[in-house]
Length: 431
Image (cartoon, rainbow, N blue to C red; front, side, top):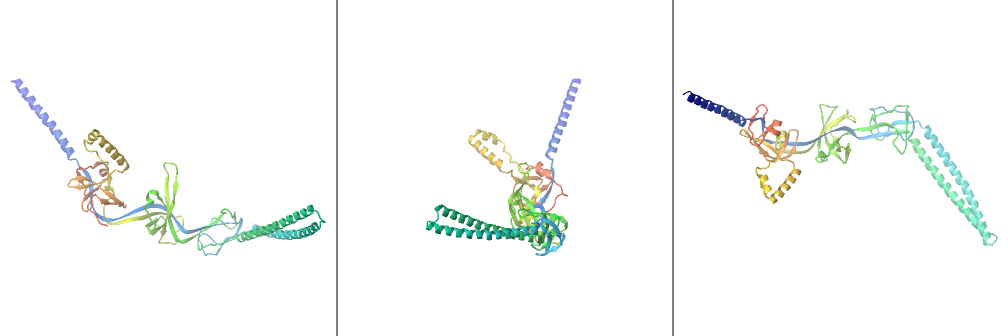
């Protein structure tokens, strides 16, 4: 009797244990199946998308003239100071002319000497001509030998060459006089155009070095501040989107609460390379932005940030920029075995794999349908700071998952259960 009771008790305990284990497994499966990802959502709608290219640069005037010295000497007159407004023809600087005046006098003396030499050689030439005619006459009458005639001919040719050489020497000395005269006139420098003196690195009494072949000492800079540009460097990947005439917004550090209007008026064709031959090599292109808004306080060299509006698409389907992600295409189950069994399909798979290596992974968004995420492949267009144009894949009025970033980029898959964060979600507002 005791054995039967023990056997019955063991069976009951076994059943209870199985029930407990089965319940645990069921609870775990149910808990896993009911796990959801918390997301934020937004309604798909239409808005105006403006694509922009951003870059930094400096403010520079359209006309900036660097005044350099062509004459060496001491500055004896400097009637302007930095910030002065000058008109074309105004006196800017005067350099001590004593050295160039001495050179001019030497050139004039050399010219007079060359002129006197011409008169001397001319007289010798006339005597040589007379001597040649006399010997020639005697030779014709057989009173002079052939050697005497040849000697007279050579002497005449020699004096003729000396006379022509003296004329060339005189012309050369006259050219030196003209050059010295011009140099003497350049001891006084006048303003080549209207503008403002924006740089004046020298003082009265300083000595400057001048040279006609190379740039001498820089005396000052004159800029026409009525026409100002923003000069920026744009990356090679962005420059192809920019065209002459594109609208630009310029923010200058010195004017924190103001946005200047402008437009692209010049694009560089030559690349500007930095760190060439290294992994950090950068290729940029110079872009000039003409400022439509002016301010008398603008100065060359001011730092600025520029946003160039390259393209605008009004009333187009758009979703938040963070809603778009990429997913690598997955192989269907059994596809590998089928391809292995068929040689022709193997070649097709290799070709497809090669094309896939070249092409980028597909772009997708996740649409919320009931309480699940549906992955939809999309074709995108231009984008602005917050939204991206959808050319194909979603329709107006659908609900797109807009966050969070981790969920969209890693956690969500087609059919994943989602839970909406009502605080982070928002309705679409048309812009």
